[in-house]
Image (cartoon, rainbow, N blue to C red; front, side, top):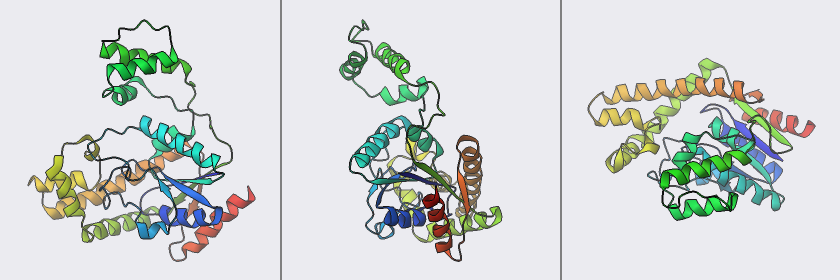
Length: 289
């Protein structure tokens, strides 16, 4: 069984995932594109060791901020992890708000050439050629031409991939979405940003600013890009914090739009006053299916 738990930030995905992992003897696979990076902790609301409650988590803290890690890499790593856990007869819970990660993992998602070019740009010619020969032992591609090697490998892979990104590749998958009233959600997001600031978000952002503020993995991290403007004296600290809140709210809105258009999700309104009610609603839905 695979349970997907998704939804916008600040709705309780982590808390629900731990409860379900305990009930169904499951391990958790991260589906947040920022939590794969080490030390980007506060900005990504990364699950803490205390929050994990000894539940095994996968694909968290697997890359340094300056390492290239694409959705294509995630697809490979996460599918391998699913296979490994299924071979151990483990149930699987996939948790995160990065819709494209979930789509690429569970469906026959086909990558475009630009995405694959990023994936292969650091491969040596020898490594590229070996991958090509696996797919076509009779290939006549120039072994010393990097661009042609990349193009040949992409074209060969495209021939063997499925063309329809809507086909679910696994059986017994439950798509669970957590939601709440929009006004309440925005209030929770604002409160979470304040909590992040109190927990050291500014120092965390400063660490990466001093490392390499232009690193590709940092440019889209909400919380960093706004504070980088503060560090550059473009805006005040208060303006940066307000901008973090604004961008977080906008991101939540985009998440809703993406999931509603791309996946068939069963949405549950979260009871924040008694979260156990939400947990029980989800369990009842899964057990009755």
